[in-house]
Length: 616
Image 1 (cartoon, one colour):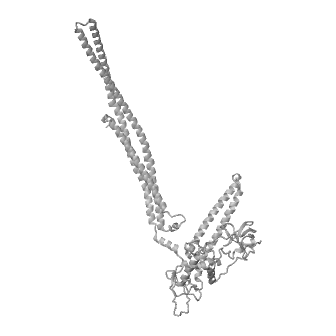
Image 2 (cartoon, rainbow, N blue to C red; image 1 turned 90 degrees about the vertical axis):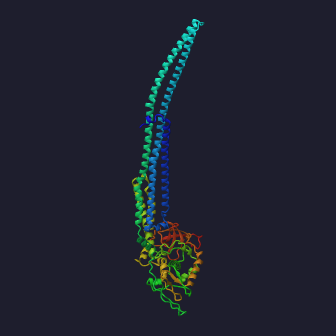
Image 3 (cartoon, one colour; image 1 turned 135 degrees about the vertical axis):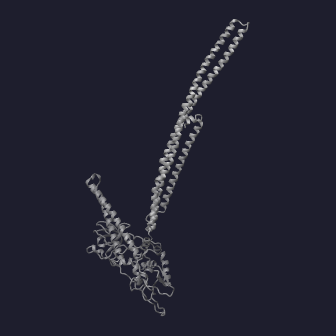
């Protein structure tokens, strides 16, 4: 079966058919290209979807994703990201293995087709030329024959006429002979042209055209095979990623199987456990004696095994449930110091200084005095609104229940230890670089790294002091050590205030079984009014102004809370002068301030500062 023998006379149809084949191939290339664009778009949308639902860094959402169900969801998002990657692989492979290859093949196919049909047209033109030559020889032979007949008839007419001269007869005879000779020559030319044409025609239809058509047939068959191979590759590209897609789906199923409802329930307990004991029984209140006010132990005091009662406001109004947190915040405000700066260091701080001054102490005042100060002064403390907004809480997290406070302190200790490790790694790297500079001075000056080493060492020392401070608070929470001092008692007064002795003229505080307080209505109204009045009056703490400068006479290592380390000869800013307790409050920069012994510094107060005194 050959196009050369079967389709010898279908040159034009073969030309149309091969062009149609190329169009089909280009259409398939376009189809695959659009498929790759769909895969890329689908993969992009999947990645955007996965990214959209990923928890944000350092946000509340990230903390919520500690539950197994949320972790499974994160795993699902990650698997979907990998799933999208496989669709990108499909697009890349189809582009490289099908679209690019077929596009190059189409260009080659067009060139080959053009060459074959050019040869076919050339052969057709040659046979047409031969045919024209044959027709020309034939017409010339025919014309010469007719002229020879006319010349013969004229000669015979002249020869029969007696009136014609002999010379005219001879001339007609010669003309007739000439025409006959020309006819014979034309006959020979026609015969030769005919034989040549027949030979060329046989060569054309039996050799040249079959050869050209055979090449066109082979070209068309290669095109068909190539498009079939491309379709097979199309399927293989999809099949290659099926195992990986299956693994992604298996990962999603495995993540779903890893969900543990019991573990999530335990995490909820760890997240919200307060550490308080359930409320005890409410004692009977005898109202038969209207002039006497009963004093009973609060439910919170009973739960802590303490015989002290709390201060309450007397009233006969209906009680109201008070949540723990609101009362704790209020009591913390009433028992906190009213001055903005943090208290001086504990009594252990001067032990590091020979013959140094003793740490100043603030004597704890009665609750009634605190309440009077609270009502008459405007201290720079966080207002009720900031507390409601969840503003910055105490550094020791004393506004949290015991269990949550322990977790926060432990988390803070871990973060500080990580920062210490980073600083130590940086110090080791700088030390190694300095050793390299010492061995190879041309690479750099080793002395230029000394200030960096000192700075890193100071950072490590500060972080270690922070760790010690938070570990001490953590120890107190865990009950391994007693309360350290007045500062810690004030910072954790949110719990201590609940065991403060109550006065005889206050009504009993009740606690409902669901863990909230039951107060008298008059107390509720009074406290609400108090919160409203002071809501707009309290502002966030502002830094103290600088009242002078000082020069360090000796090196002081501030290892206790509230103190700051200084180096001999260092110049610092004074923000609070000595109040007679032997301590001066200084500032190094916006973030570093604290107390140092007054005898360790030489103070230069600014004369223009309010209330400043010039002394050395």
